[in-house]
Image (cartoon, rainbow, N blue to C red; front, side, top):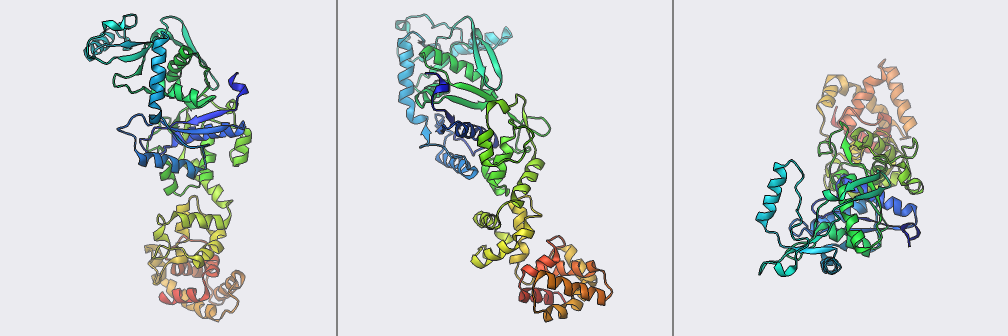
Length: 475
């Protein structure tokens, strides 16, 4: 049965040595979308064979990052380490079938081979000295490794869905180790056995794995197993074209969460790194699933640009439901604790106030951090701590302007946006002042800052009692 007639099964197979970095998140997203687009499923396999570097904390961080992004795998996560007995079984089967052999080359011999290769200006490789020797020649008390008997001639061709046909000369692939002398399987063997046993039909991963694909194809052929469809996607570079690093945005998913990005915005941004659907930039999850396929993938490296991500995140914030955004801020505590009440709690009353203010707050914000910062005035405790510019405005005539408008605000019974605006404009006309000469001091006194939402919005959102109290603190 061909891969195309089977249920599509993709997999995301990270090593648990750290958080879910942005390149891994993009790979997981592509696997998830391809599976969803074709009515299939995506598996999660934790490649934890490196026991010294693999930790449960990292496994949890990977799962948390995927869940936060909304990339949900099917079934339980697999542990590659727990399948080591199966990997050993296959390696020994390959020896029995003549496709692999025990090698007893010493570390000194291997070092000599590498040195000779360097002197001759060629890639270091194993010279096959145990390829056709009888195991009875093995030195006493030495555990050998199991190596693949790679064809000496011909080519291995990867028919890649993104890169096209990529050819590798077999002579350059040497007899790789499948099972180490301590009985632990290598990554190359484990990946092939796991993908086969788990029914993986499509392998979607970064193009830095292309050489691995050639080596793994040789294992598939030796075992007479169907090879999965391969798709090696371009890597992500920084906006300057250099390899992605932390300064470009090579951060973990948890860092993007802490920076105030919405999962939907980050998903939308990541899907456009190396894949496109015409000129569409904004895509819903449903559209991504409907449109996603290999035909939209490019071969060149994608460029990560924080400014584009910020703009996209701003779009999602502006178009999100107000209650949803309030929930996102509440879930982000204590990260934004300083932006809310001193207790760091956003109770039901505070949440209702936040929802009411959200239409004006979200128009100015490109991140949840900026949204929380903009909402600072809602929960600031009296007396407000003034920024230097705000203090200067109040000390240079601003307090006098507030004194002129304060009686009119105290007398106002209709505490609505329009009524407040009209009263302040009437005072400005009566005192022959430009509106800004009253608006700026009001903004400074009510928020402690010079940059804030429109002053009439600020006045209307705060209760009349709170407004009067804050203004009296400054006159």
